[in-house]
Image 1 (cartoon, rainbow, N blue to C red):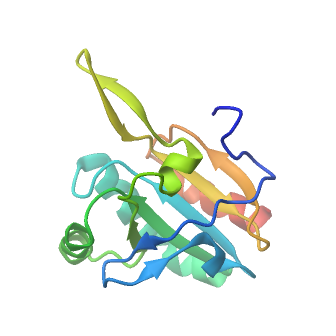
Image 2 (image 1 turned 90 degrees about the horizontal axis):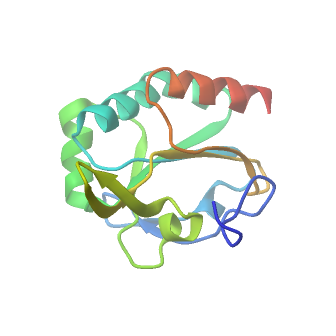
Image 3 (image 1 turned 90 degrees about the vertical axis):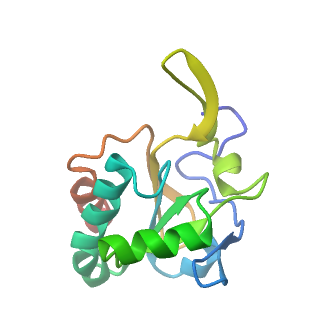
Length: 158
């Protein structure tokens, strides 16, 4: 995280993203309740599918705790629709494709490297927002196994 990247206690940047149905969603839409926004690299890849399914499995518990869930990647709304249908996902997804979007503002769209090649990609990260829209907790560079349950515990505790 750089000096200019929002951290815990800072206000979440309020940047609109596209929903699979062609609408928009922005962090301020969740004001008045806690929200979890999880950023993931790509629809229908093994880790991302597991993460989305894990959040889907726990969605009733997040709902009961009054916590909204939103998964974000650069994938198109159409790809999100296919991802939701293929895996029976109940978590809301959004597309953060525009330059200067939320993932850019948070520094989670960053240079990555694999097999000696560097490229721009989404760093798997999760943000827990407080009722007032401030960032209550950040999980940078998430490991998928057990992550959704850990986030649920933090959301309940916070």
